[in-house]
Image (tube, rainbow, N blue to C red):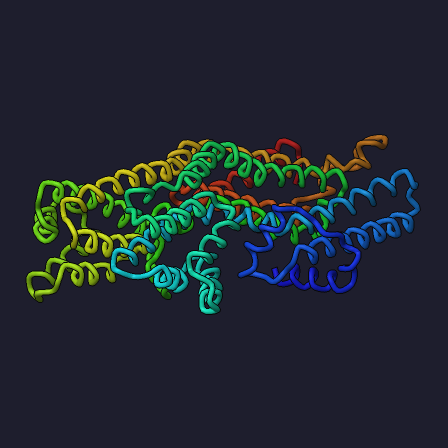
Length: 505
């Protein structure tokens, strides 16, 4: 982003005067959205797109002309290069903004709960903005710090929040902030209106789940078939004995790692993320386990509160029915109430500080504040929130079911491709295109041995080991090291058997 910002500033100084005013609303919104991240203008973006597209076009023309290519080829290639460069530079802010869309929709519900927590504890909208600014939201915390600066300059918080909402790519975030400002004017209950209803994020998650199966198999196919295509190309070109082939192995491994990262399981606001960032942070499984146990806690607590019990009695009554992850938190609260005579707000605040997840911590504080007014009304609210969150959690977990269903296909694809790669490697001396197009193959038994094509074999062997390991990790399989070793052994066994049959020494 820093390089792009410098390019836009440089271009605006050089050719900014030649750029006409633009009415591209999407680009204008993207520039405003990215203001907390980089200082660019619409004029600068257009100037950079114009300048560098012309530079690329001229450079391609000179390069292809120097290579003595025909004008019929030079003209379209240079034109395509210029157009693609213009599109990439001009659309970059919009692409970055859209890349934040799903993340912001995930964050929206969490931020909304923070506003509710502040309002119900008697805080102002400025206090809520400050709370979000001090949190660890990837984009919103930085943007809200800028918002605080605008508020300190005299702009009303409500105006700042609505202006901020207008430039967001996430419909969920815009709806939440609109509801917050509206509730301040009409004195309505925010929890009853929207909490837990991030429609856009849920829809995007379902769409990604539907696409997951095909994307998973495409990635597995790419990382297993590309080495096969590479082996064919190297063999046909007669480079099977080149020592430089060893340098290709790290490229295949890196490509596999990059593709696998698309399916890595990161902390997500659909479940929860760590309450505090530390050197030894809780694992994703610990966070999810606590969150799932907490949803069960909300269901049980909501039913007890609706029956007429107060919060202290409800906690004590459901304690034995809870899972260990939440039982620890409830024990902290019960101990503070009955042994230290702490208030229920203080007791749950202590419990919240021991929670692993950020959302669990916030919800514990919200429960205490809601129950101060009416425990029975709080029970209704808690039950509704729990039902919504359970529904969302179920949608998010569809991902694991889809990956589990595709696991065997990925295993089969990885293992069979290892065997095919081994057999193909043994044919590399026969596939040289120069031999195939001449009187016949110049290869005779004993003239080329395994030592001669060792660079190719080492490259393919390392790649096969890595592919087996990383594909297993991608689908969450057990014993990835063992699968990697199995693939490596299959490669060498297939190579050995095929070599013996071909008389390859």
